[in-house]
Amino acid sequence: MPTPDRIKTPDTFWKAIESLSISRAALLRDAKLPSSVFSSEGRMTTKQLFAMWEALQTLGGDDIGLALTETMHGATLPPSFLVAFHAKNVGEALHRVARFKALCAPEEFLVAVEDDWCAVTTVWTYAQQAEPNALTDATFSFLVNMVRAGTGKSISPSGVELRRNRSDRLETWFDCPIAWNAPRSRISFNTADLEIPFTSYNSELLAMLDAALDADLNKAENTTSLTDQVRWHLRRALTAGRPELCSIAREMAISERSLQRHLRGEGHSFKSLLSDTRHQLACEYLDEPDFDISEIAYLLGYEDQGSFYRAFQKWEHQTPAEWRSRHPDGRGKVPIDT
Image (tube, rainbow, N blue to C red; front, side):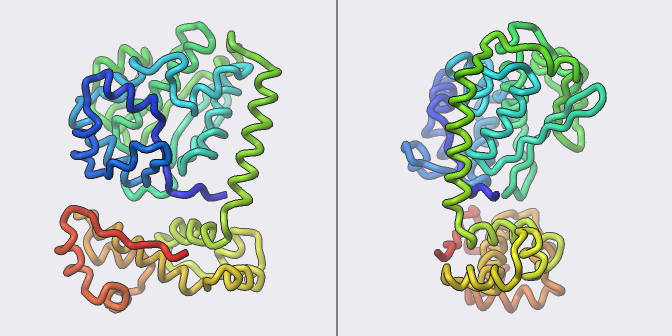
């Protein structure tokens, strides 16, 4: 079930950066974020979240992700990791983190267990660029911190792969082989370590947490409109060519006729959603100066650049190049029809 591209940053994060003498105002200014992200109901898109972490790395240095982990510990850990402290063992804790992230963010926390190792990777559903290095560092170091705190043992990963340059601090922290400037980011644990018990294991509390989590997951599924689900599938499918109604219906396990009927009931059609999604993605891609217009046309599933130009002029009454020149700071916004 798709999670909306809306991410809440916990209060513990803001307290942690302030303890590191990084001001919120400076961070939001450099990341070009609105002050509303501070509010109790404030949410960021994946693009905004990545911009914030890039700005955080500029302000705090290359090892800011690890510095945050060293600042946030015990009860101040993010909820996605705190929720796993009462797991039975390391393996169950990893899967609990994955379940929690499925509820609170458009981020997939993938846990793959092989014969003698268990690999963990993250995938951001709406990302159009690589995850910032500082965010990866924070995620992996939080994970190791959770395992060590939960077991009371100095457990180290069996290996780590990072896209970033070498860091002495990270090598000391992880205490394991690290592949620097790797093509992907991944952290692995020995399979035998998955069975190490957590000292804070509490079966009764876990039962209550599971019931609450299941209720929240069911609520999220029931409140996600079919229109939002189709938009999510369209975004994922567009880079593989122009998605067709039949392929989207097949992915959603629904007949084409039923899908069309339900969309009409919500005031939409498949054709209009495809156009709206392309329009929104076009502006997002044009915000990225590294993307050539010909590449954007391909990413949106157009057969040629001319077709993209005609569609964009219909949406914005100007060419893609003209639109890009008028939004040099990546501030162009396209509202989503509801």
